[in-house]
Figure (cartoon, rainbow, N blue to C red):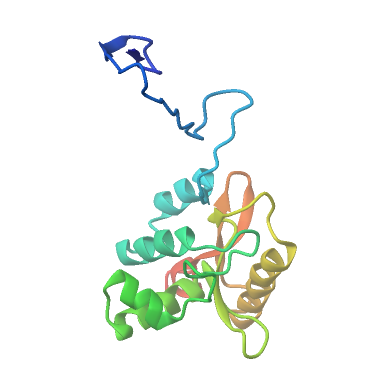
Length: 188
């Protein structure tokens, strides 16, 4: 039996199999061009948004690391942060996964909430963390309710800061992610 490298087409080696051997070929579901479908679970990372984030030095390394972790645990469609079994992750769960103290985790999550990168809320008794769909997505569509949560939070932030906020520009549009407060906008 000849073993052919799928990428290069080269014959790697020749293997002699006994007559009564059964050969099973397991198909890998990776992208191979038109018509192929990737069946692995994945999270979409919006590169234009992250390029803008990096250009503004918006997140500390710990905040970026936390967001990357949270993005990997987004629930499809809603962007709620859930564990492998689909249960909402708590601040302590996140801290434990990242190996950070509860105090440090509280500080990082509060900073990310202030920047509108994450949201903590939901219906009473079912509070959970959500990741801003401008940064990460999972599933085929952006959930309108999740998007509205972050847009409503933007309005609240503008009102509380009396309009003295700057929001991250992604491409030609303005996002709902805070990148400057009144003190940094006006140099106070």
